[in-house]
Amino acid sequence: MRGKVSIIGGGGRVGSNAAYALQLGGIGDEIMLVDIDAEGARGEALDLTHGRSATGGPRVTSGDYEVIAGSDVVVVTAGLRRRPEESRLELIERNAALFGEIVRSVQRVDLAPEAILLVVTNPVDVLTYVAATELGWPRKRTIGLGTMLDSLRFRSLLGEALDVDPSRIEGVILGEHGDSMVPLVSQLRYDGKPISAVPGYSEGAVQEAVQATRTAGAECLRLKGGAGYAVGLAVRDVVAAILGDTGGLLPVSTVDESGEFPGVALSRPTRLGRGGWREHVSIPLSEEEHRALLRSAEVLRETIARLRAAT
Image 1: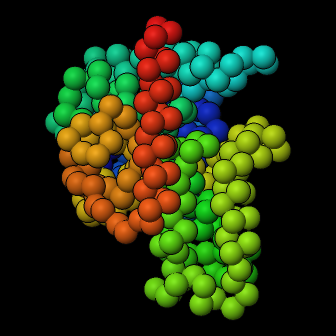
Image 2 (image 1 turned 60 degrees about the horizontal axis):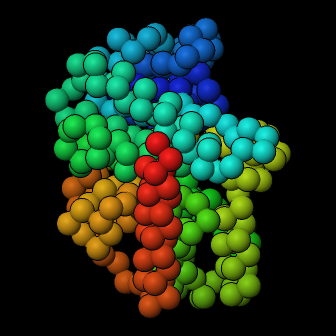
């Protein structure tokens, strides 16, 4: 699969895990790692290079922003962690300031004509909206990882709860990558059949998986300092859909002022390919799920408004 992918924050846990997932999947033919910790990025690139003979995957190198020239996809994973006693809004302000510096650095580089910016840094929906509205290029070329990770977690945790193969579960989470996420329980399928047909199914098991998904990020943070492997796989799937020009339908975060959710970036089923996102696809929602998605959009609008007021 041809294409150049650059990862800003490639020396960190998420960035290096994303690079590893791309390498194992043979996604792209060149990966560039950029990080404020230049030696860390160089070390990650070296470690990945040592395994290339086993994967036949893309070449991995590191450098400063100049090395991302010609990139087809620029993945931003760099971000700041919450300080003790720091409010959520204060963290958002600091990450937004850092993200702005990163975007300005990306703008100064000559990228591929239809390069895509894939935002992974949290709060991903807020920063996706900032990038899409301030980057100065078509909004279809700005995509947030959104609820891709939540959807992977949901299916995996539900598979554990029901003791079935999670790769055969069809299920998705929409809305915010955060507390107001919307699991589409009404659309859960296993091997194409309603999930309720699985032996041992119970509504309680589904709700336990929903709750575990909501708290999964905090639990990874508590146990090991943050998530990495699963988010790397989520990045891999999005980048593969873009470089492969597949038209794949994925729950990523986008801005579409002409749709039902103006003034916000949030996740909906979205077709991806070269050039960015193509369209949003409507899927059946229960009334409760639709109301929850509207609430999720409002939560994000309020956060964006507070950020703008604070800055």
